[in-house]
Image (cartoon, rainbow, N blue to C red; front, side, top):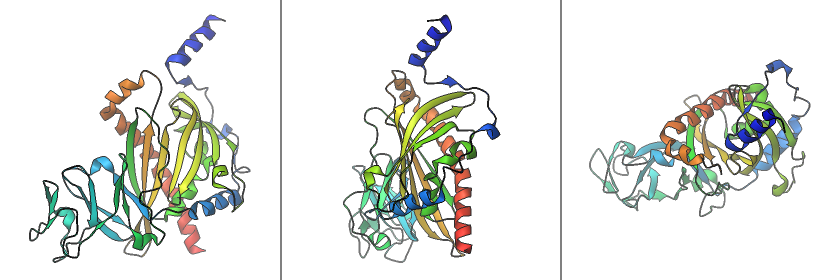
Length: 335
């Protein structure tokens, strides 16, 4: 083994980064022949038939603390807060007394106090006010709205599998003028990654894609992608799979390479129409990172400094992708 090869072998054990060769954006292999519309549309139709149990992700868990927060799902205004034991309470933001906005209230000892006349809510039934079923998975907060979902309800959200062991998580939220299916369709097209996001991805190759078959079994319904995450001239090569566990969620899971087991969950939550009757959708993306490298312990200790960069990267990607999802919606609505 030459000295250079030996150095490279040692570096591979200590760092996940590789020095990327200089390439031009236009010099990439075109992917339009592979990104067949029929294949993407078929994958979207399959995803939309999966049950959701009427659950909607609406906020990052760590944004709900000592103060109540407001949220809107499907045109329903919500208030969320925590009880004395840290449990999540979610219900209508309209006070049953005279309609005050409960999200502007105060929480004392786990009880929400209405700011207009002091009516107190302990998370149980108060007058005609009833809580909605809620779930906190440690990363995201969920609410079940049976009247909006219209499906058979489930006890808990249909969650993707997350990494075991130590992990680092960051949640990003953006809003676009489109429908949830436009967000999911965007991610069911992995071929656009290195073309549309060259600042984040390079050397992207879709190793396998599901057939354009509306009756494909769920265990065969996945995209397998080899891709290198780019940080300037440095790159981290991985193999990832894309799956849709429910109609408003698409998951990218690293199955080989640095951070195997890490996931990026993209949840598309309908907010309801704007004043012009145009649908709005919140993209709530949770990046849950894991690594078996000993140095990952340092990353956990440095979480307050690292997670803002994780959110920045996700925001940059989705600012671009939402513009594309909004275009898909406009084209469809004009047809």
